[in-house]
Image (cartoon, rainbow, N blue to C red; front, side, top):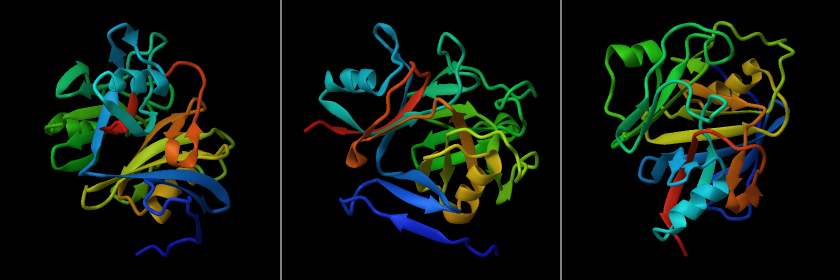
Length: 240
């Protein structure tokens, strides 16, 4: 069993907040824990086209008396903000799975799928998913995988100088908790993957994106703004 590396936690004011700031290996991160009992959804399109922002998602939910409690960009997208790779929303597949190697981070195989099932969460390597597709109520494909069955992606280099603010998701061994993390500073893939393997202890984790990474966490007074995004993932509750 791997020894845990030093981990310092800086908890936000509310003891029951889903999101927390933490430091791992000298770098600050924000991590949001989502339980399988929560209402976690993916968002891409609204009545007027691409949503593109946390505010647009909240406006759409507000029409039904709902609101976001946490949200994050949920994977890579084309210039027109269509998802790259598999995307399933409320049981409907909108774009297909991609299993071929290609340029960029998405094509750095193995990549994977984050799947929201009725009974929990899973991060599944894409070709494993293709061989036996599970029943995902929501799903987003991205890449590369960060952690694969307890091991880091074989292409990651500890001394890589490719540094970006990055965000990703890992799942607990029992599939009941999804950990969404975003770095507070530019990090390489190796450092980001070790956060999931060694600190959060997720056997499988998936990179979602870098440089455009953003977080909505009202408990931490976070509502990051920037250029329009593609898919967005977030937890939903009844509005106050």
